[in-house]
Image 1 (cartoon, rainbow, N blue to C red):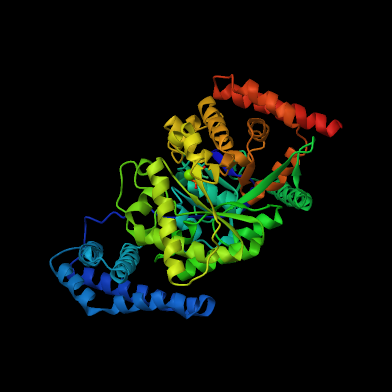
Image 2 (cartoon, rainbow, N blue to C red):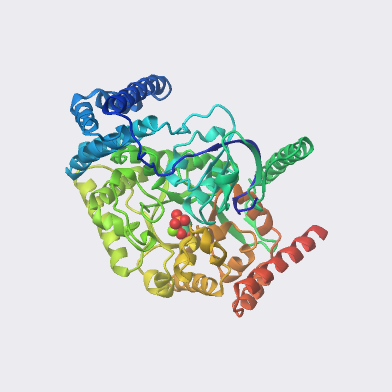
Length: 574
Ligand code: PEP
Ligand code: MG
């Protein structure tokens, strides 16, 4: 079997298939007495499971985390909910459908109330409804928050929020039927250093829970039904891979300097404060992208100012003097946040996403900016706005930041006055207008993941068009060049935090076009540093000139491969 390898590494472990298929309500149902019994049995079983989970959570994560499960227990015993379900069953409705109908009505009432507390209860009720229906219909739901052994998680579409809620110490790999190479699940896997393959056709009809499977997260190959000998060989390769990795890690403390002495800054991309440690371990000299929305994906409620402040402060303190670029919320597209209750859109990547969403949910943006400003005292913070598509948006965001500064000053809450402000260049309009935008900010960071999808009109998460998605496309390369030149016209720094910055083949071209800073998954840092040390900047400039004359993505990739092979051999010979 084959898919797109999106996060490097070999693995071999037992599979757990996530069952997230839509529920089908049975047409044939029993008598009202039988259906009521099914419901009451399910209610008792779910209650028992919830009590057990609450006790375990209390021990492992503390009282606050367990509180939410206490609420679930009370709701499960609430006559105001149980009795209407029984009444619905008495009208000859199947138990599962009765739960669906009655609870949906209550959920809608809660959702209609413009109040954070009731919005939270609506989410709790959805969880309970889901558990009850699955219990009645006897549909297994895998618990991935605590896994007993190393496991490969397989699913049709494993969302970023599902990934964020996994027992990551035990996840050996991810396999998905859907998805492209820069879907956010793929990026999250790379950030977490978990091997992953996406876009695997017929995965779920072939692989079952409990199967032992191996795969290669680089080539996308999946190994099924291996014999003893093949398993042994794969295990030996996995050990070798670990050794190779630690050898590179030992070299990663050195700065990134080309063969002719030009020094570059190599930063890491992170999703949680804990990831900062990995960036330092692999030799990262700063954080070029903190995807702050990942703080929101795994929690059922929006983190308040204090919680966010703690998270930003933790990263800043960990990184000391090193720069930390925090990107404000980039929610929407393929990243949903249940607590915001976003409505479904026909084209979410072209819709209410990132800064656009923040303009509608001003309170959420305001809370984040205040938390960032307060944390700014603890390190070298820079703030970056995502998905900017117009000057109005950038000016609006800057104005909001200024308002928050005024507010804190009036409240006598200290913050750092001088904070650099930057934008992601990930929409073609901004690359084209780069010179204007660079007058209004202190730095750019090119987001090739979105720049590619928006330039080529190819959904980054859709496996059906994954073969059309490539940042080697000459149009994408030209836009990158425009962004760099636009930045330099007004003497601001231009970095890149899209996946292209961690692709060794792209590095000589990016150096040749004048890119200043490179930010990538921590796991990519040692290889990029090693590769940079073998490059000559003049040769890179010549390469860029030749590449900018090409018309096809395949030609661009071909020339970059050739350059990579030739220079690698020359460097080894030297
Ligand atoms: C990008 O678009 O290249 C980027 C870095 O942002 P994200 O992948 O989070 O959209
Ligand atoms: Mg982006």
